[in-house]
Length: 107
Length: 160
Image (cartoon, rainbow over all chains, first blue to last red):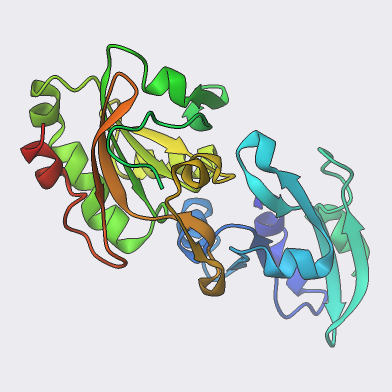
């Protein structure tokens, strides 16, 4: 999250219209998190509370045993005209491919 | 669904500790010799829960403790990270233990879930409060959908 916030101008400078953050939390939690991270107006914070989007993407992971239920894997994608142009899915526990820095290189 | 006189079913909840999520089993929370008031609600940071339900218990902390209650716990189908942030936001401090039931294990075992999938919230907990002594449910106050009456701190206090 801080990476995309710090790079928002650089990303927008590449012709990107919208930067969105999606998580299997509800809209109340995403709203509170937006305040906490001061991302209001910069990053669209979107809730996928029932996991509908994450399941349709085929990118869920089951963290029920960790007390987190079914969640989204960590990934980033570039979408043009509704079509996925780039998809960076992290290996479990990793944070490399989906960073703002890596996404920027592909814009 | 559980009823008065039942033992609280086994499940593992998670609170936010200084080093991250910390597991708390229902056997630990509702241990023998302990009197516990637990209340559950549909979601952290949601309007009724944030404006009324939690503040009521935080405000009534001293009165509830004076009735011989050892622990007040708030349980929601959210993860420990969310419950920790919400506890800070609500100034729950050491007064109300904020416990996440992220996988709804506890809520399902209690038979008190509700399906809010169509509202983008997945499976959540109904709103209720209970008084537990020695692991056994002594009082159980389940709200009708949308209501906020019987599970309030004020009503629980009357039954302690």
